[in-house]
Length: 130
Image (cartoon, rainbow, N blue to C red; front, side, top):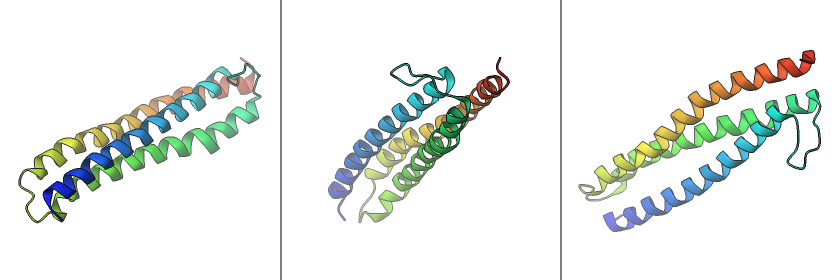
């Protein structure tokens, strides 16, 4: 592939990945907020069991999936210049572009651990009726 073709792949992949991550980020935060408040967006109360299932089946896999997708995309960007016949100018752009998904991975992973602690504390309090 030529550097121009790979540059277009780079731009398209960043665009697609960012749209996916933003949509996922919105979904995971909405789920977290519903778990924490104990209400749907329409104001309908959610029971403890429902909130626990939302945490285990929705929030946790989605958060882990977003972290994995970010990491995989960052690795893809690091290896993209290897496909070019001449990757001299493309390589620094790919390395710079990889900072965004690697930063997203760190954010999804480490901030997700913090969110998880808060969610568990809120669910434990809801279970005991506090």
